[in-house]
Image (cartoon, rainbow, N blue to C red):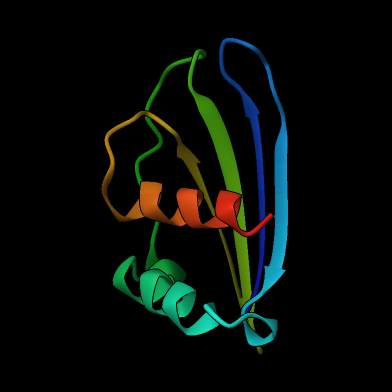
Length: 91
């Protein structure tokens, strides 16, 4: 799977960008399992309102499937935050 994630906004207006291919990573299976728990390809998470929260655009391609979601990093934790943390640690 190919994952592309872009963030912008928040108080400081900082931008972040991550691109990875799970097939090329030792922890790729763990990332794919996390995407499965999120039911990523069927997901349309609620995007919290707040100009002070970073807004993420995450796109995952898996063969013929391609899906993009938009989430705000609101500090609520859970599997979405776990995905963002994993993407950050991939750099």
